[in-house]
Image (cartoon, rainbow, N blue to C red; front, side):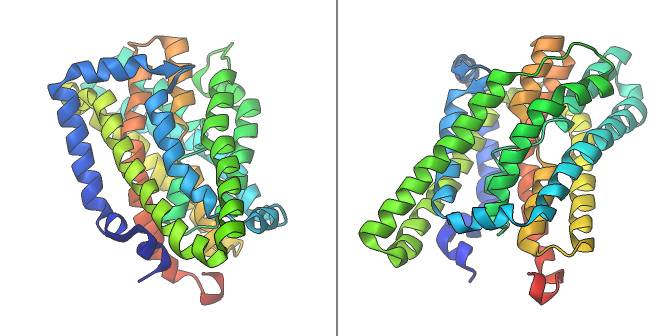
Length: 350
């Protein structure tokens, strides 16, 4: 059995089952007890859900403990994966999302939607496409056995470039001027999801190795924390679907149509980036973080911008919420695809 499967135990072995059960539990609880959704909605700071922030920390901190600082230094010495990530996130993904939003919402499903709905849903999906993920991708890369040093560096680079490029690209693709970047949301999310768990993970690893030794850290502490990360991921699913799952119950057809556009775009961008990584001869461990980052979205930034521009009850805001609900299942599917395709890499690139 592979090392990471041993660390995750039964949680990793039957992850697909647990994910399905947690989604069902979240939808059921949100439908039966709508007051839970209202309560969660009040627990927000600068557009960031406090319960989700705590759970994301619980997901990412165990991964940070396992990152060796030598991996991070090596990542800075290998610019090709970082360059590929920037190209995929800013030169490909926003434009493919623009195209698929037009194709599916404006053409394929046009007869089922009003012109106003088409415009709003397209706007929401485009706002998702322009916001690359900066936190959850650490979990996806870990599960796909990617290079965590490169993943961490790529997420940091994404955070910086999003500050500069998000508003101009969103304005270009939406045809709306005066789009403001939610600086506070980006800064707070980077602090909570990257900086804080990184510092905590570094200090924990340093303490564990000094007090107990490298073997205890690797074979005792890390497996225990890995299980914490997976359990936090599953609880996050329950909370997300309690928080927003009523949308699926009330508007299943709308959710399905928006999901098709998002899903196809994620698959296409993931595939293009993965193929490009093969062409430039990246190792699997460096190729897969770039492809997964290209596929995922920073839904909190997209939601913040959508609600500011179009309103909380708008179709654009609804489309970004659908992005939240589809993020975890779709990305876990890509993790599964990644692990299957790993064997297709030449042995010296695995």
